[in-house]
Image 1 (tube, rainbow, N blue to C red):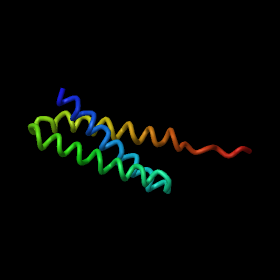
Image 2: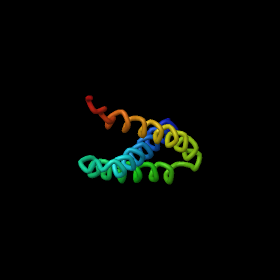
Image 3: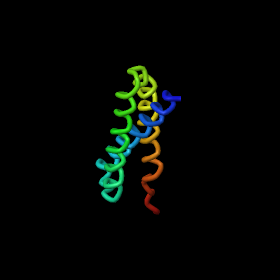
Length: 87
């Protein structure tokens, strides 16, 4: 079960970072505050989990991070999709 927690925490930590990256590039200032807070929370939780268990949780965490970053970038594009001008 600890590997599932590791996967989920890393998925969220990396996902928030990817979402934040797109916010900065896109100039979405209203979401920067919220995502910055959660970046810190999930980073602390992820590092605490790995440090209090064994290094093998880093493997499941790495997979979670890989899936999380891709998901977050696609999610951001979907939420902030550009509207085509009406001609």
